[in-house]
Length: 214
Image (tube, rainbow, N blue to C red):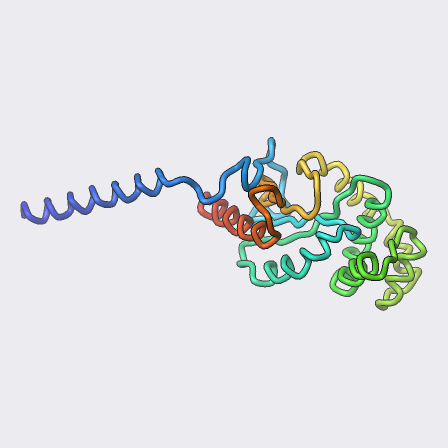
């Protein structure tokens, strides 16, 4: 009896020691160095899942190179992760490109035109800066001109563009590509995060952090 008590007491002490040791260890990635905590959490699309929001611009060469990496990451993400894209807006050209993205989304053709738009701008030097040029691009991928124009100038698409413009400051976005994790954390490259693969490793860390907090 006494031996059993001593045995369980020893186990409890060991578990307590292990827990305190783990708590004392520094986090692998820290706020202010590897990622930023947003001043206020931004509402996510689906509170039942952990949102990972890719912030991009079609005219950004770094975003173009990030696409295959983040696409592969999203393809292998766990079921509790909600991966979304968010077009950044700082100027009128970016606003037109955001409008093109939300048009593709409304027509359910993102998978058909997303990569070709990136390629046209970054490989073919076609800036796609007018409605006419974008209509032609969509037509190349099976979208009738009248369908494109109707969606491009629709109220729902305009509303999404306006909302995206307003959320730029909420997300504290200063460059692309960036990733917002669960409306709380901003991940981008910097002196401590030197590669785009590093960004995704930190995204994994933050997803796990949010998962463990639930």
